[in-house]
Image 1 (cartoon, helix red, strand yellow):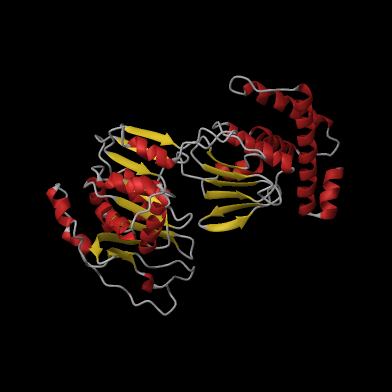
Image 2: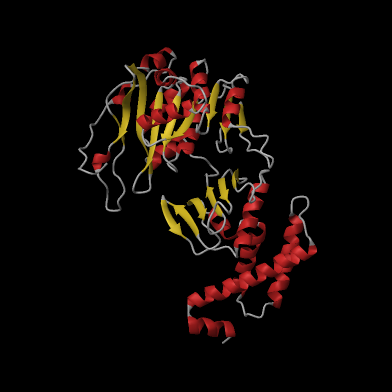
Length: 448
């Protein structure tokens, strides 16, 4: 029996993992130290660096005194290559199609989201310097920088995943890294129906709303699927229209031919050169768009977006963080006031009532699923209040199954929208069957 086998036999499988971790850390530091001494820099596509790292790894493994099985050696080479050239211990989760989010709370604390549930992983970075190298490699690839003088950054990976990083002194306990993944093959409307995110009737209704050039607002909390739904709604836009997308970091994946994508830019190290979402919205109005799609409205650009919707740019779509359709209107009021203009609240509400046609609200339920829970028409001003009418609502009263999954679905309230005639005039009449309501189950007390 080898020394390695005796150690495992005496201490159990947990000791095997500890031994491999020690070897991995020792070889990692050795290879990084050797590269630093050589002053090695990648050139071209980086293949020369990969070749050199592979040589150093093989050499370090030959010199390693700890007996290792052949399978363990292969795994160590893969792990160390990921550590040095890839994204370290999170590389395996970035490749995993079932993982939707990766959260790094310091070198030794990694969480993932799978099926809407958070899981703590056993993976860890070698040390804080290792985590910093991975973060800096990510942000450098998209022309961004992060250090103590500029300790926060939003960026994206080549596959479109969204990345946020925070450095000390803002982050306590080491750098923080959050990666929001998006599927390489984005969800289509039929996928959302199959997953239960919305019903077939709601899908047909929203398709007619988009094709009929109504202005839509997608709302919901963090990680409820707003960007995914925005992508699906955008897929309904006819191929012969000119579309301009405006985002902080590009996430939308539109398949039409005539799409122009612009991206905000943060200030440089001297605090200059910033280009905000509001700047891009204003500029987009001069680019002869048929549709303007804004990834998310967060500030004074809300006023510019409302004005665009009210001045001939029908069919525009954007998203807002909010807990309900009514809360979304309150947020838009607040953001409009952030534009720097001292506007009366009634004037803002009149702009909102005139600009918006439909609010689609998403929620992340207790079972981890993401569902459309409201499709609401923005009707008119009545006194000082914007009147809203729910066209579709999620039926919470149907209860949950043995696994705690909600059995409810998005149902028509039986009410027909006032803009139905507008859609009919544009050759997109709403099928009466969409609004046939089966009624709502009575929700037990506390269900909502």
